[in-house]
Amino acid sequence: MRIVIQRVSEASVTVEGKITGAIEKGLLIFLGIEDEDDQEDVDWLCRKIAKLRIFNDEDGMMNLSVQDVGGGLLVVSQFTLHASTKKGNRPSFIRASKPEVAIPMYEKFVKILEIRSGISVATGEFGADMKVQLLNDGPVTITMDSKARE
Image 1 (cartoon, rainbow, N blue to C red):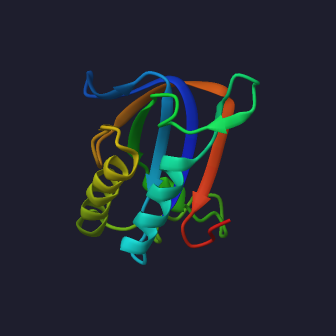
Image 2: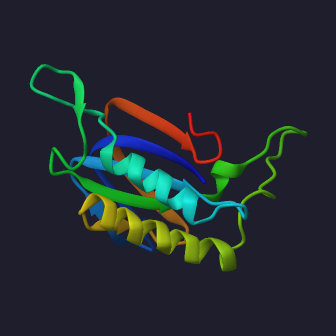
């Protein structure tokens, strides 16, 4: 699993002109799933996200988690996170899971993230043409790969 986390002042996802998920201050999480991902990957990422200290404290230091600041969580599926640009100029997405594998894993990720964080998670719509609007705060953008665990 690969994720891109952006600390935001606000973010929303629109599908066919209708907002499907929106948050104010919090974390926008783009999630890419591959076939090798399993429950251990979900647990590791959700545990890290819930406790990730990337919000400023009163001294301006990144010492607070999304839980500490009462922030929101918005998860958007994004198969393009597993793009390979090794050959040619057209990305290959062969490593990204097909919907029959990815949808249950995506739903599991959202559920576990809610449990770990204690925060209701807003979402986009899996597989839809989504329009994502965000106001990156900082900017702060962090990538994580459950297979690399850096």
